[in-house]
Amino acid sequence: MCQITVLPDYVTSSPMLFMYLHSGSNSLILIFSTKTYRDEMTVFESLNCILCKQPSARVANQPRSPLQLGCGLAMCNECFKKEQMLARNERKHQCGLCTSITPLYVLSQEDTLVLTPMGYVLLKPFKIPECPICQDEYSDEIEAKKSFALSCGHIICTECYLKTRSFNNCFGFGTKCPTCCNLTHTGLNQRKDRFHDFLNELPEMTRQIETIEKALMNAKDARSCNECDEKDTIDKMFYCSACSFEICAVCAYKRPHPHGAISLLGKQANQMLMKLQQASRNVIKTHKDLVPELHKGLLEGIDIFETKLRSKEETLKDALTWINLQENHESFTKMKSKFESSAKRYLPHLHDFDTEIKELIQTLNEFPDVKKSD
Image 1 (cartoon, helix red, strand yellow):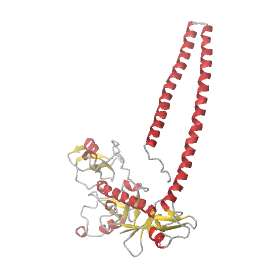
Image 2 (cartoon, helix red, strand yellow; image 1 turned 90 degrees about the vertical axis):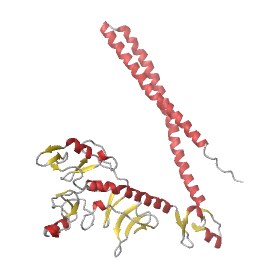
Image 3 (cartoon, one colour; image 1 turned 60 degrees about the vertical axis):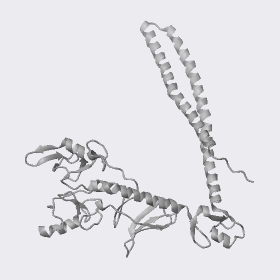
Image 4 (cartoon, helix red, strand yellow; image 1 turned 180 degrees about the vertical axis):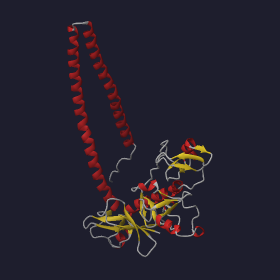
């Protein structure tokens, strides 16, 4: 089970602080700055050791660092050493233990995947990596873009493997890794692919993020009654401005407040309205002041350009040679053309700005007007 615990807003500005395993229980505790929420928490099984089921370390040469086996699966360094000490027929994994130390690339996205004692959990949408050859994103749905695991631990897409592989009479098909140049001799579907397993789990983990975010949004709308401590949504509670009390409808009915109470929703609406209108005034005033000044300066610049251009064009009469006359004429023609092209680039933007303002006005006309008090 997953428990989300409340922390005061001043502790963190982020909705999620950290995760840890509660002492003496199997509950994963997620610390949020909102109310408590419980739900089933899923972790990436593809990022755990195949034997001890513990999450892999992000770096090499640690007890939990993953070692890639000959079959393509990963075992932590600690479990691998234990397996090496056993006779071949006593080992839990029978793939020959051909290994390389290769922390999975996805673990480098530390701001996306958070490590908990139970495993890795997705915190925000995951950026799918690209094939180093064709630069296309890997896909679990498009066969040609599915990842192909190389024996060195790196991956390329299936399409690029088929294009770059070559046949050897002794080893069969093989290809060179574009990242480390090591050779891989294996055919399609002959090795397990941890990244492919990761992509299979990704949709469920993404849905889990959406579920938690939805719960957090709902939690933000809840307030505690100052009388009975019961929680309710803002639109069902009341507020006393004299003593800054927030009370639920039941308490407001049972124990009428001496100062009277208004809807908490109304109070929140007034606060949000004041902030919104102040922000709107600031933005609009800035541009109302800026546009005339820019246009004034622009018109002044056009006037100056026109005066100077026509004055300088008079110098054509002073040309000493035909070549000099042609050069000056060409220079003035280029300046005129540049002015024209600049105006053509500018005017459509001005027209678009005017059109979009009119569209915004039309959108506002479709909103209901404020209700008049009786």
